[in-house]
Length: 92
Image (cartoon, rainbow, N blue to C red):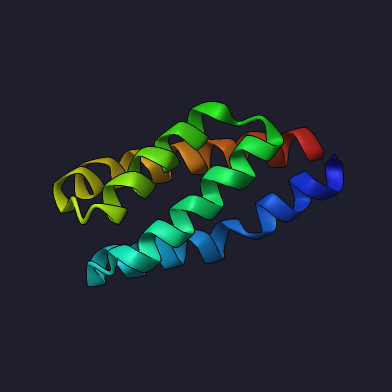
């Protein structure tokens, strides 16, 4: 489980960077792919609230619902950052 958590933490910077990039470009196809990956890995570690936020944006981006993605993006990243902080502290 610690190995899975470590991998989850390692993916953080890359995923955030891609989410930001695809949001800026309004590349909803790729945004949905990264949101899907975040949703799945968050569910794997039991971060269900974060997974639900990612799922909502995955769904919205698949539907090209820019308003929902734009309105929920910062909240998703903040929740993701909080989860990473908790995990880093727990693994120390």
